[in-house]
Length: 153
Image (tube, rainbow, N blue to C red; front, side, top):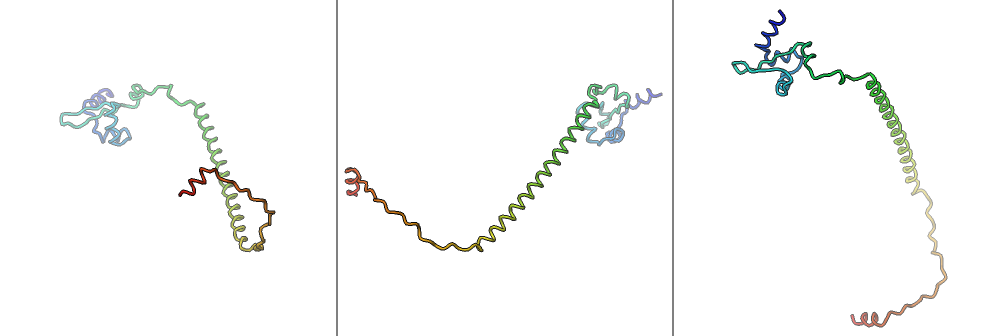
């Protein structure tokens, strides 16, 4: 009796909306599956798409999914440990950023205090520049051609 129902379903098929409901996906997803030839579909005499929705057991038998594609528990453990490591790393980075922010705030406070004190500092008395003993100035005489061309202009 099951075979007769499956033959009837294969001949008539489901509409796109019915197939989507039965498969638990949207109508657009059914159209894409048809386009990619992931499910069997045909147009009836009136030009409407009809979809053959496979049973779960039949789907498992014909699917491209192989046991080698299953995720092993070792891989899951490795991924979980990696996630844990990355979370710890992120937490330590956040702590470091908070510490540096506090340090920057402290420096800004110190700088603000120092800039407020600048006008309060006593002005230095203007002293004369230190007198240096005068050294004889050496006069450099230009070569004749430089003197001659300088006088000409």
